[in-house]
Length: 301
Length: 301
Image 1 (spheres, helix red, strand yellow):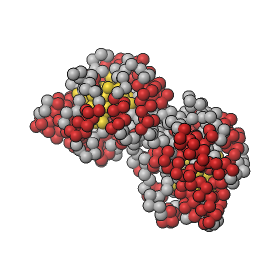
Image 2 (tube, helix red, strand yellow):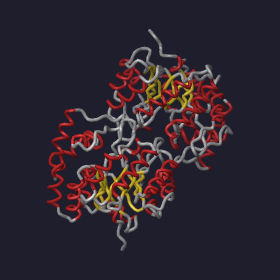
Image 3 (cartoon, rainbow over the protein chains, first blue to last red):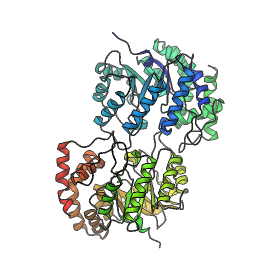
Image 4 (cartoon, chains in turn brown, orange):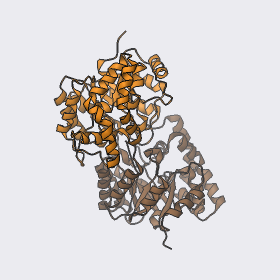
């Protein structure tokens, strides 16, 4: 039996993409964040994910961010690059840019304005997947795209040659094992099934997901990698202990959105002075104080 | 008592923006569509609305479309231009471009990727509204933006100097009169309350909305203007007769999305050979045949 590619297993850490108010990427600040991930135990970097504000950056700035990341990380960790866009031709262009810059894999969400049909999403994926030789992960994130994948669509996508992984949202009913089993039945054994939604990491990994795509991993890669390792080894008490350390952060993620919380955390840690792209607003002082308290144990872990 | 601006009363007709597969606007085809609206009884043109695929067009192409529209329509009808964008600075740039091109008003939807808070939407509107002197209509369209305006937010926005109208989605409970009454209590008398969602036009207008923002009006402005006039005059039987003529089209809108149906109709009418922007797909031959049948009476009206 062939196993999922190493780049789609274990912890994938999703850093912010620090940028100024005009959307120009601060390559140095980005590289500082990436260097903290290298050697942490994370198995890949998820560049230009939702946390990396890909939808708020121009093509030129996405290319700059990708080049800066590859330059910084080299071959020490695979870099998975988000290439989603409203137009299919734009997503193809981003995919080609990422491949030209030396990315290891692509991440593609079905971003839409006019809601997409299942067939429209299929053809969008088919076109972008065929644009490069890079392995592609299907980014299933209805909280931002408002697109719901049918089981049938995931099966059709998993059969395309370069599509080798899916990043699922937390199941509404909390039944990870059931959902993973249903997905395993419709995909090849080497197809990787992963989850995102950080507060579900422990449960998803204990239930046997191949990978976890983590926002917190972008700033706290060591404890998040430790949680991932513990859970993948079936160590329930070790996992619970680490998850408890993250738990105040999870509550803030749920209340204020993980992106806003991560900007506040990066600012508090002196890693970046960047603000979220407007119209998104930085958190006020009261919530920022809560973020400060929540990250205190994580900064030392 | 001051009344709503004429440009935010009556029928606003929303044409497609014909473009090639690379997103280059076909200015001549757009002008053909606009000339059919002038003199039809429509009171304004809603350029670059959702039907005008604004979110799928670059800044340069939006500017070209706006310039082509103003050149074609002149002062014969006011042109309301959609300026929504994911970034606040981009929406500001679109607003300034529209003003420089001679637009009469702006239409702004709270487009998002990361879901927006009420306060983020408020500040986004405040910034874009302050960027020009043009009157601005709040585009409340949760089916594409997935943002839900609170009553409180609409009240705050209506108090800003240049914000003079709102384009509401059809109320979930069908209670137009109740919703209009609630909105009238929180806005100034000269603030215009309009609706969109074409199959609700008759009911919304009979219930006393100031304006209707219509997709079908972009291709069938004469019968849609007749429906609007009849309903605004309280002529229930005349309204019902016209609404019945549109009813097969409304069913297709609900089943396949008004945008896809309008592309098929424009192609059938020989007005444009443009296709919807990928990933959106043109309708197949079976549904196109149904569109052909549905528009037959409207083409002659």
